[in-house]
Image (cartoon, rainbow, N blue to C red; front, side, top):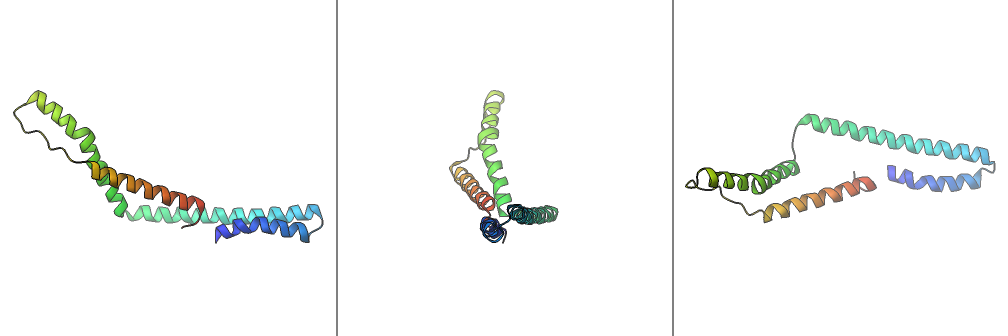
Length: 131
């Protein structure tokens, strides 16, 4: 609904110019329309903030949340914990079995996919084509 208002504002401005010959009254009418559109945008932003607050209160993590956490943990192990543990164990106790390494190519695919989807979602939300 709101993107339609944003698209109709220039049309309304053109119509006002044609219908109201007095420049001062035309500018006043344009300002009123602009104020109404801005008020509608603010109301929409407030309702989205309230919805986000309610979602945050629920404490339910969706699939993307858990997939992101799992991806971060596994990459943290592959990049930091496993090499550090291998180094420390090699220095301190060379006869102890080293921690296994994991193939992080699948985590890269998952991470880039999630980041790509998040970017598309953010673009859609910013453009206003999807709610």
